Length: 279
Image (cartoon, rainbow, N blue to C red; front, side):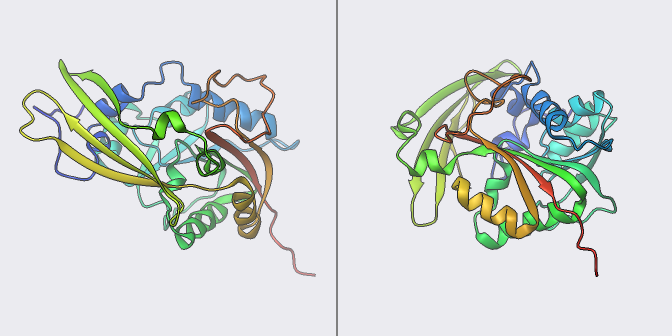
């Protein structure tokens, strides 16, 4: 474990710099996210035997990567946070972890599945960043390989949904190493940039001043996402709002996939097209 006498607070994100606090804030004791990936891959695997190499982009603490490795996958986890990766390496020694940016990573391998969960791809705010990420996924997938992603649904927020999330400040307290950490989170829409912006203010006993941190997610409409995937060389196999690892009710293996796309989460399964063969 990464030993600290107190939280690391000298960069942009208190949670990613303190992986134990991150897992306390966002617990997944039943491994819903990992099961979601495993079940969807089983559901959409091609008839021919598929390989077992998986790349988890935005792997964070390695929780999902470690679960999938336990199912027999050869897993590589990729993240930009060195502290998250240090924690992940200690917790999940069967996974290979790589520090890289999701827009420009280059690994000496191709994979059968690429995953990108918990809205990680929505940190690609601009069109060039999003195109670069999809290009990297295409380059690292074998022909016929699957891209599985889970994110916020732009149609929900930009279409007028999410009043309970956008109406004022939400306050939450979690306990880490015996200390209560309280977050006050405000979300608002930036329509011009098509972003969901967030300001989170942290307080805890012994904190001299509130810690204020900001971030944002790109909001993508379903048809917009379909177009970008098609342009990048993918066929969309499934695009659905419910269920998923962060929906209510949560994911289950035999679930029918909801195609209304009115929920606050958007889930994607896409297949990399085969290489063009010269005549």
